[in-house]
Length: 87
Image: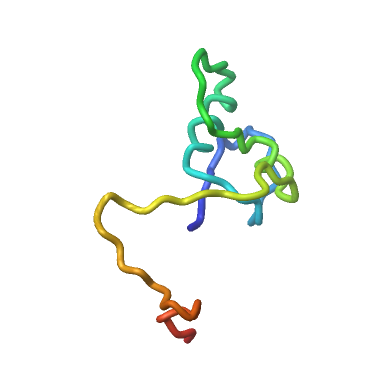
């Protein structure tokens, strides 16, 4: 899923698309960093300012995702193949 950031015009940036892996919790850390605010509590986000300024940089080696609280359909059968087909 794309994560789009549009900083103020005066903010130094390397415009374009980055392949850096990010999580939604990084939004909070990024905004705090861009505003010059130091959080007084623990959080798990990583600021993306370094990626905004140099899109070849990475902040994470991997990301995690979690499903909702409703029962989810199993999208893979026991053979390891996907029930979905490529178009």
